[in-house]
Length: 412
Image (cartoon, rainbow, N blue to C red):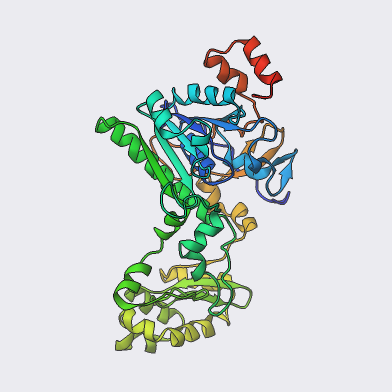
């Protein structure tokens, strides 16, 4: 963010009442994106999250993308509100420590390839015997069962197999990615839903702990709207459509004199108002365009009419006229636009955070917004192994035992 940009808001003061997930104890054993995003989300609403990471270099995300003070700026968001336990779970001693910690927690998050936890003596049967109420979230590329379970995968592969990548880009061209690891994040959000659902069942229905099995490609597929029933009933294979919204019209991106706007005029009354704004009441009154079904057939004609009008106006003018007519429209934001937008700031979505490395950085606010028990940033992302000794002391390890474990490379 440029020096001239308005200063981000400081994080809101911690609410006087306990947060919604206060008292929930979570152990996060995942790395990179999907599993840690779940831990981030639970931690923002009050859960105590202990992140187990390798002693030497920690979670690889610490070194991904742009670094500041030797640590990834991404890390400052993904790992806030967490404690770091630097522990080598490839060793017998590390595995025993992990079992003792998990035996006292409510939720375990892991996103390794299926079979990895079992190899470490941390499979479900072992952990359930130690902690019958444990909720174990397992995120993997293809799930814990099925013929592909042992194959490696990342979010991009899940996006491709889940159907999303096929729809991105222009018709007839190589599909493009959306620019972020959306497959991982979708899996994380489904995992979070699973954890909260299992917690409700355990508390309200008196249920036991259970495993939550989340696959990357299934999480993407779950958001693919009507693709499957359209194929099943009509044999339609939905294709990429660029900036348009197939089957719903008019809804597209349109060039202006100085940029691009998105206009969604696909409600019946909205369409009529849109046509009035662009001076095409003749189209607004046409009987065949009174419903979406007719407008879809005339989508090219409508896009041409709208585009002819927007090209004669600036983005600011288009948005002003659309807003006055209650027609949904918006411009395409980059991160500089987001950082300087007053609405983002008014809703505490651009916050200032002091990192453990000693510098200040703007970070995204918290979503969703609970009005009575809102989320909060209680602590910045931890240094590697910052909480190792406190956690082991809580498990009953003496200072001498910890010194020996450190000398052997089990902890850091």
